[in-house]
Image (cartoon, rainbow over all chains, first blue to last red; front, side, top):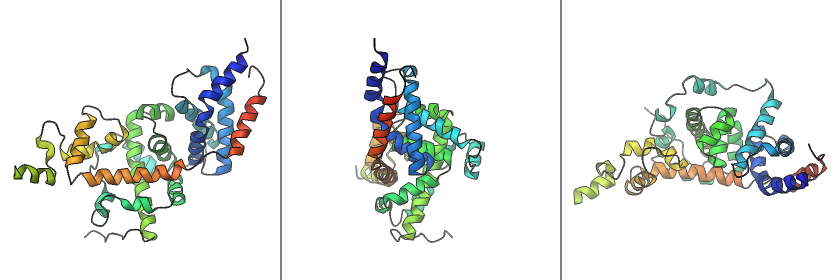
Length: 198
Length: 97
């Protein structure tokens, strides 16, 4: 029995189709095209070496993202930046999703653009730059859930935190990202800045 | 009847047992968009947003935000050279890793 050929075939069938998704994820994690390419290459080599540990029919994309993130974190060693917002988030993680039901940014823009049409005017590069500017922990969950469509459970398993923490980080990461995009839209004149309250 | 229509327009659809309240709909907005609702059905929340003119803009705001993210990121494909390089390296790996 030619196990290698069989492994290669199943790997090409199940894992390789996710190469674009892993590249997108790697780009957002690393923030640079060169680093993303190295990350993807290493991810797929490791994935292939460990292919027999993968359970066929389970979420292959999520499995590849886990490897990608582990490779990235290992490369980061201890130089990982710690944003104050993340620290704050981690300190008060419980119940973060219920803190403020109405999005403060929505409140700020509701008179001129209640449906957030300004998001549609923002160029792709500015959106990517804003995602890249998010603190690492927030960026990971926003990309995994909002861009790649992973479930809360899969994301929690992937980043190794409880589901509640995923929700909390998503909540804060989305609002932070929306604020950055709003500031960009104001600077570019897509939307008028709301007058300071009172 | 007119009162009912006005009430719907003003967003107090929570009076119906089939619909959630404005407060609940907004509190569960992210779970609804993420397909992760728990304890309330997707259609109950969806119906609220469809019928409540005050809550609908909140939904549209978040949907426009997500569409912008997708548009920006989905256009990104791995460079063809990277794909070829990965496939070549896999080919070159020794038999039993």
